Image (cartoon, rainbow, N blue to C red):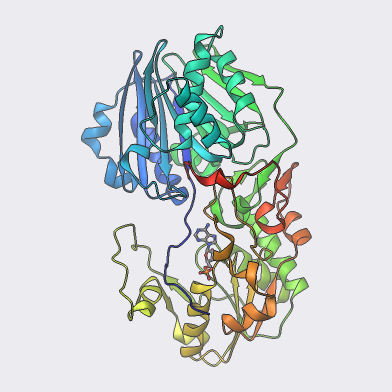
Length: 471
Ligand code: AMP
């Protein structure tokens, strides 16, 4: 099989943040720190919009949070309410105009929106809106949401009603932070596919994709936004609307597997604990005799620890990840392909030499990186490499915001476990069972969207679903 070289072939989705200031906080700086904590959810663009007495000021650009903002810019962004966004797009639309927050001026003033997720009927809605005369500045599905709200607002009593009507029309996943002249609004899609939580900082309120961003700004966690819930934050505190579109929770299981930071809690469950539990179950399902358990940094580390705890095989650090490889890293040319992985990861030779190694990772997508890491471990003197994966084979595309858009890119959609074992040159390979994975996040009351593992999509997913996408 020909393994393409794309070290960062699949990327994270988006992160959103918002703050409504009831104290003397500097909302732009706090949003900047919040976005820093959410940087793992998207590295392509970053942006902050603030409301300064009804006028929205904003800055957004391609790049990492510290590349887009400095003190001068942040000092300029004065206001009472702020929202922020970090983005990675799933389709080819890696453009500045698709960076968020998206800002519009319409009949009722200005409005800004930050979106994490992906609509599956954005193409259809956009066509209809364009026929009605709407003009779009970007190719992102998020603009469709904004356009819909602004149009529906005209025939509605207030923004609340317009939002509820919008939620009846859009299909897909969305965790939204919206900035209006008077309010900060948080919305979670009817299935709660993407996470969103509320925090409190003194008397001020914060919205964030993950609790790690609340921690970063010193806010206390209040609660998660419910599936299908709209929270409106204003001078009078929080008002909640439980819309009738709300359904049973189907949080994306990949948040626990890969996306979220281990120090976050989502819908009541600790991401780190869920990964440890998955690692323990993996050890029970696929035991092996070995001398050391190592994790693939960073998302495989917690599961590796769990595997070690359960199996009694010592945990060690066997791989080192270079943390400074960013967006601007110049990809090696053909013929230097191995270089890319070697620059990104290196083996701690003394830790693995002469040893039977259990290598734990959270997932195998294309198999490219995994095969190279296995090879590097063997080159460094590991006598055996047993690959253990803390989630089931990834076989189906995701239409809800994770960049697993094409089935043919997924090694497990075309090959059996035995074949994948041979392709990655491992001595054995074991994937955690679906039941094992779904039972790992303790305390999370709801169900999960596991469509990328099972093909059971929680809604109809048309072919053109990925045409317009936030990421
Ligand atoms: P590969 O062997 O090339 O399939 O790469 C496997 C690695 O990809 C694992 O370490 C995963 O943590 C990582 N991974 C899983 N899902 C994604 C994703 N959506 N974006 C980027 N990396 C991912």
